Amino acid sequence: MSRPVPSRRGFLLATAAAGAALGLGAGPAAARPRPFGRYGSPAARLTPGTLYVDPHGRGDFTAVQEAVTAATGTGRTLVLAPGTYRETVAVDASRTGHTWIGASEDPRDVVVVYDNAAGTPKPDGSGTYGTSGSATTTVAADGFTARWITFANDWLRGDNPDYTGTQAVALKAQGDRSAFLHCRFLGHQDTLYADTRDLSLFARQYYAHCYVEGDVDFVFGRATAVYEHCHFRTLVRDDLAAPPYGFVFAPSTAGANPLGYLVTDSRISSAAPDGWYKLARPWVPSSDTTARPMLTVRDTRLGTGIDAVAPYANMRDAYPWQEQRFREYRNTGPGAVITVPENRPQLTRAEAAAHTRRAYLGEWRPYA
Image (cartoon, rainbow, N blue to C red; front, side, top):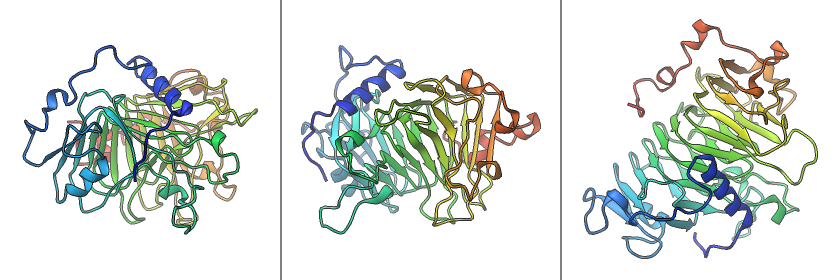
């Protein structure tokens, strides 16, 4: 679905903050590249199967979902011209090996955004969307790659004080061999849902040089996911006057899966007061009570926003974080200071050798 773009202060501020955090400046660049940059134009296609999307009507389609629907089969490429695409988008499992490219090679320029939340009523009156249904973009297909795209959900609690379902997903990724390179993920609660299509699938995902912001459980799900050279940013919450504001990670790794989330060579910064965020809490969903959430954070700078004394918390008391698979290794920064050793389980050097991107992703090497 699509509709005109409203003026939304929260989303615009988030976009500016994300751009500044990436070192790209807070506002639009003074001089923009040509709409399709070095990726050609509708008149000079990358390949015969390339589709061009431009909200100003200079491509094959003006909406991303229209192009996705037209791009049947495998190995198709969509080039997205600079613009804001206010719509929900779904890439079903049959569209394997698809690639989306932000034409200007600046993720600020191409924004796919909508504002559904878990508690948003469906137009047909059949209930609310729920967490999964709130996603602006859902990718169920294997082999999906995105470069230089912003995925956002600009639903705001302040605009909907009566909602109890405040989860609002920007991207839900479910496929194996999913890669997101130089992308941004903007939202508040449940921003980035790195998941799988079903409990038996151990989907591998790779996020490199990405920016992710939010407040509650804003990186969550059961995928085997590697986050490398990424920047995670915790936000201020106007609706709370005491910590914790929220949690960065909430993995729900299947008990049978030996590998969950790996965060490496990254950083976590905060717009919130010092120590008002937890690094993680385990999510053991009612649909899989045998889950054993797994998170390894290594060689990463943890800023002042992370509670260094007690960086982990329980989501449900029946599944204490101490019984899950949470580990750290060689982290730096004020949020990584070990003051209570039992609250910060560390890998040994020998154990750390098994927690690398190659170990997690196997023969698939999107970083090569």
